[in-house]
Image (cartoon, rainbow, N blue to C red; front, side, top):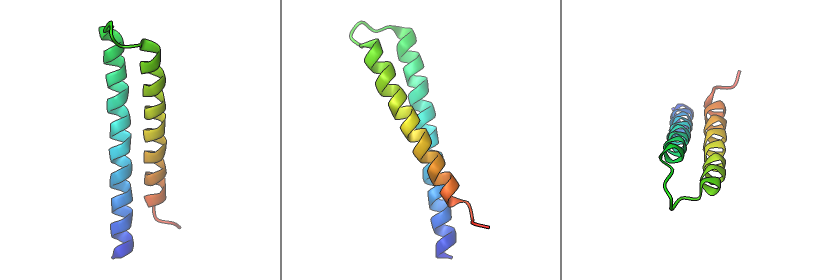
Length: 70
């Protein structure tokens, strides 16, 4: 029972992190389109890309780790 709960928890955390990556990516696109004068576009894209890649990679690692071993 404990193993199943751990797998479910890891899968949910992974899904959450992938969703966060999608939201950050959408926010970067919207902020880039809006072209605010106070936002440094280069820093926005660099930091946003790092956050998206990190969240997506960690999320996928959690999802893959949660799969039962055969």
